[in-house]
Image (cartoon, rainbow, N blue to C red; front, side):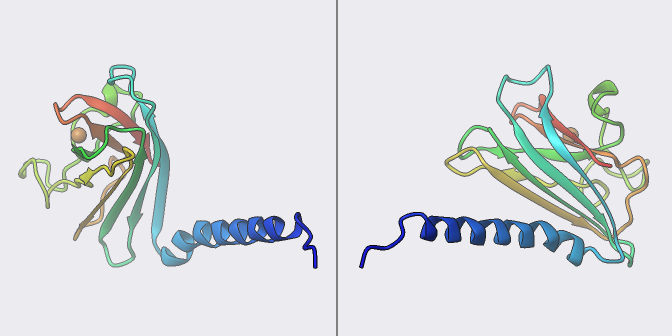
Length: 158
Ligand SMILES: [Cu+2]
């Protein structure tokens, strides 16, 4: 009658680990034949002092498109944040300006990649952007800005 109090939680844990592994593999399977770069978000020293973490991923598809998805935590709740692909690494001039498909073109999508997002009540946000062109090698960082425009976090893609 008395159930083993250890077995059920252990089985639950094993299921959770299996699910996590499956989810971790999913992007690789999805991206077969594509070029994938990824990086972790770190707060800029000049940021607003928020404990920002998260990750960014860029997929260059075989048919010449670019998809950027980001997951960011540690932000203010229910707030909209600008985010863009920038043209230098995070450590050089705070990733400098936005990466543009046509350098002489508009400073906005679809000539730039903007994975904008709005955080939930826990300060967690997910951004997504897709453009119909293949990003060049200089598209190597994603910057999250405060609503004021200040650069607050950056992820190097490699
Ligand atoms: Cu930016």
